[in-house]
Image (cartoon, helix red, strand yellow):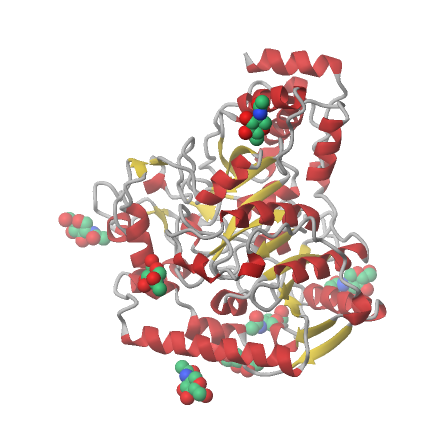
Length: 544
Ligand SMILES: *[C@@H]1O[C@H](CO)[C@@H](O)[C@H](O)[C@H]1NC(C)=O
Ligand SMILES: *[C@@H]1O[C@H](CO)[C@@H](O)[C@H](O)[C@H]1NC(C)=O
Ligand SMILES: *[C@@H]1O[C@H](CO)[C@@H](O)[C@H](O)[C@H]1NC(C)=O
Ligand SMILES: *[C@@H]1O[C@H](CO)[C@@H](O)[C@H](O)[C@H]1NC(C)=O
Ligand SMILES: *[C@@H]1O[C@H](CO)[C@@H](O)[C@H](O)[C@H]1NC(C)=O
Ligand SMILES: *[C@@H]1O[C@H](CO)[C@@H](O)[C@H](O)[C@H]1NC(C)=O
Ligand SMILES: *[C@@H]1O[C@H](CO)[C@@H](O)[C@H](O)[C@H]1NC(C)=O
């Protein structure tokens, strides 16, 4: 029936071109009568159907998407298309609860885990008119940055098929780089919204701790987990953030009690204004680089140097910050709270009454290789499970946990002092000191996300360039910069990012994603099943 409706609508209109589409371009097409919502949604679904094999970014498609488009076309017909995300196709990382699709974390043991209700952030997106096309692959349970999982297999970088897409929200990053949707959601416990943005030439925001309720999202850390969007333009990041933050105070996630009145109900898109660069003061963290020349490091340092040169030329004051407290590996080794909080958070998630379907009911059960429910269906990656093992023996009751909390407070005060002493608007540094790692490497090394993760600071990630082209990376490998602000400075960060975006577009689409996909060839998109054929042999699926 949907096929008939789609082809009926198609015959009257020009096809909708989904490539690099934005909220603005889709609304223009809809409101000027060029396209129906069904045209828009089917054009993205057709791209996924035809092109997903390049990247393996999608775990599940939402069978309701075209039906929702029919309903929105009726609303369009009666002039009632008022919502901010009206008919905007989006994808959700598969750790966000959805009542109409399983929520798996990419883990075989959670393949049948079926939330009975949407996460509040998902409800907010749907209420605002967004159409959820499906769920994206992620690094299994969001525990590493390689974006390989026992259920969804390996997601591939759209710019270089020999590389990972960053992670853990790597399916979201790869899908948005390929224009499979307008934006996608991600989660970030240490790097996971920023690494995929950096590795796929995209923008993202990790908001201040507390701004977006984490309820209904598979957790890792009460202290560090954050939700946010990944998109191709800063305007679309601002629009998505506005809706996701609209959940506001949520009694089920008490960090939302931290939201100050000035950050309640903000429309980040309506207030988006390019920050005047002549008055901007940025701190450049010089210790967040690897200045030893090499094929993986030099492209990153050069792209950053080039961006700093352009910023200075535009009138920005860039202050070098050289303090040795800014050492990512040291901060990660000492202050990371995941191992203390994982078990408690997962137990609460897996045992909640609103989680239906069949699934283990505690972290221990999930990881019990011999349990009938656990099944031993995990990727065996030592780096990923070191702290899972530790977490099964740790909790916030551990005496070292309070020392860690105290250390984080010290680091947070030191960060505030850096801002004050240098009168800074934001700090900048590369998200990753080296290019995103190749498929088969043991971990996504060299990332700088931990500073914001433990201090709860907001970060906007901005594309700054590409490595030189090679035969496997026809336009080069993308490189991204973090822009870290003080708590609740989301609007300022977005405005700075807008000004940087206006210095000149850096983003280039992956070469193969320039293909135009005709909707007429769409067979009728079924629920996709994960490709289990491309897990690198270094990461066997089995018993831990
Ligand atoms: C108009 O749209 C709003 C928001 O989606 C909805 O609540 C309302 O029912 C719609 N009105 C009509 C007449 O369909
Ligand atoms: C907030 O929630 C966390 C985890 O759910 C809990 O450990 C903590 O005690 C709560 N804090 C307050 C102030 O209620
Ligand atoms: C820095 O880069 C060099 C050259 O690429 C490499 O050998 C070294 O391991 C890197 N150091 C770190 C800490 O990543
Ligand atoms: C990239 O290519 C340019 C121009 O050919 C060259 O000057 C530069 O050294 C190359 N950069 C790297 C990292 O190989
Ligand atoms: C950063 O900390 C690590 C220990 O985690 C240490 O090995 C390294 O030397 C430090 N780097 C600098 C530049 O101080
Ligand atoms: C699984 O169960 C078998 C038999 O009860 C036992 O010998 C083995 O050690 C168990 N393996 C793990 C990983 O617990
Ligand atoms: C935090 O800073 C205080 C005061 O400088 C110091 O006494 C304490 O040892 C620090 N704690 C940690 C865990 O770094």
